[in-house]
Length: 121
Image (cartoon, rainbow, N blue to C red; front, side, top):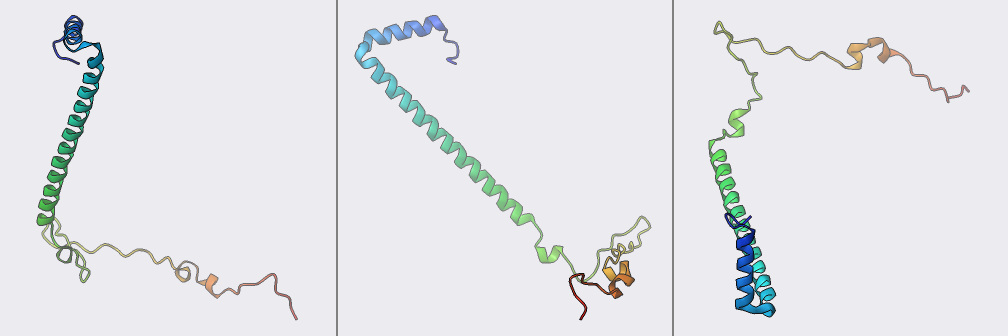
């Protein structure tokens, strides 16, 4: 915690401070030092956070300048073809299966739905 200072050295420093400042002023000095150290730590943390935030902003700016605009990256007008090992374009992927109710069971669409709560007149 205090580097190379051991318990005997700390006791000696405390006794000298007690003799020099007296028992009435020593707690006041301790509080003042504690507050100063707390404010120093708060200032260094704030400075560190500011530097990290600025570095992130610069990284985002660099990423934004190297990205391809969306209108150049996405093309909806024609399918993407990738060349195969022979150099010829590959076939586009097969379409998804038709899962509409008519395609799955055409008889179910033509079946009449009966309402059990309907009474005959």
